Amino acid sequence: MLEETGIPEAGKVEASLPSWERLEQGPVAIFECFTEIPCDPCYYSCPIEAIEEFHDINDLPELDFDRCTGCGQCIANCPGLAIFVLDYNYSKEEGVVRVPYEYTPLPEEGEIVQALNRAGEVVGEARVEKVQNAERQDRTAVVWLAVSKEQVLTVRNFKRMED
Ligand code: SF4
Ligand code: SF4
Image (cartoon, rainbow, N blue to C red; front, side, top):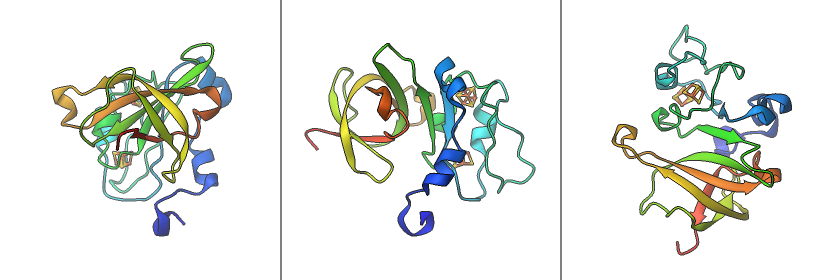
């Protein structure tokens, strides 16, 4: 299915997630990287070596969720746009999903956007909480999407209302 549609199977997605206990503890990265390709910049981008060293450049990344601080430095370094940071307990009512974003114009902080799932389907609305676009990110912005807690595991992209 992934090879044909670009949409990962539910089982693969589930296997890539940390435990609920870890999700509730604070921000944590998830890697939705399911195809063995010669790629490893995520490993080199993590300042605390929370990603296991690759033995072969085709290895899939393996993240130690307990070491990961959710800093998000790896997000913009992934050419596959496959890394997200989830902050389930961002506030009492909302979680935040940090997503890589390479379209322009970038959204404004506070803007309401359409929240999309992995298949690109609209699943609700999200509020843009923050936009990170430092020079070192090389034009891969990281957009913080505030969503309902129920949608933290679902939302992986967004569409601006005026698009
Ligand atoms: S979010 Fe930060 S700590 Fe976690 S894997 Fe990415 S770079 Fe490492
Ligand atoms: S940089 Fe991204 S695409 Fe490449 S191995 Fe790491 S997670 Fe996968």
